[in-house]
Length: 516
Image (tube, rainbow, N blue to C red; front, side, top):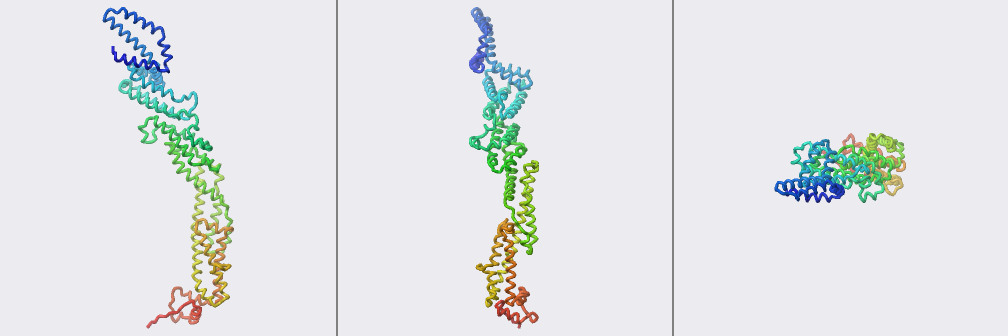
């Protein structure tokens, strides 16, 4: 007789007997007449003990009765645990072997088993109401079934592996039962206090539901999860789903006044989780790399077509030498203005929406590039014209110095105070083309900068020629200009009269070089 073991069992029996969940059942069991009769028989036998042999026989019967009572006291918890083991495996034979193994030293395992049963009982009851993380719990339990089956199939190893087996079940189920979210029946319970204040947060509900549906796998997502307990993975999944809500709120789509944009966003609810993995990372990656660029293009397209279409008449530059460039820009602008795809997006197949937006945006970007390149060319051409005639100012000043009838024409070319001020206007014209987007505006009837600048260029050229003709120096100037940068004369090119006229007007100075 092992007195130490009996003492331990007695102390454990007192603890087990006090368990609330089994108290009534144990009281009813121990109140049965059979137990009273057995105890009375032993008491009667004890009074008639006359030898050491009879004493040993009596004590053995007493221990046997104690063991049977102990087993009855332990039975509710142990039987419940074994029934649970059987429900989660197909090996009833080895489950019974496990019971027989445990009852021998149940005082060593009862505390762990009770903790496991308490944790199991605290998990949500799906029969009473549906919970949003039902799938997570189901997959957790499925994984535990594999663990239980593997343990039962090696009954010869019970003695060596029972502690690790029970410790693992205890840690897993206590961990899982500690997650309050498992009892949630609505996604509204996932919102934090600030999110609950968002009156538009319900807009994201379909996407959140998709995140919940896609985010309940307990398979390891990456190498960092391979050694994690299942309940920790479950906790990670819930945390990730909550992060999805924050990511969605951060987009601000629900607060947008553009109902078409909101509808477009909602159409991509399933595409957001096509890539498998941590749902928060997947969603964040989708928003960052797919949705945000698409939204930016959408907003750019919308802004472009919300601008009033420019009224442009290509007759405004019909005689301009850069007419082909301006004509092509005008034609491209008209074509792009007829290509607004935004009204078609609601009815477009979802797999075509992104490419439709990108194509439309590309056409706008190509127009902008064309406008920018053409603007630079036109601006430079007008600026070169300006500089060409600005450089002739000193020459004309000398021509008109003694001819009052030419002064007004000179002023119309150069003076800021004149009514016409052709050159100042031309300068303002090319300076107005300093930014992208300004050329198309300048080509429009409302702005008319191109029309007016080209008109002033024509008038400036005509005025310049009129001054030359009226000063009767046109022929001389053309003659001297025919030499270009060459200022060397010989007897064949020397024209005394023209040189004299140019000298008298102060348009040239004369120097000579001795050749001897």
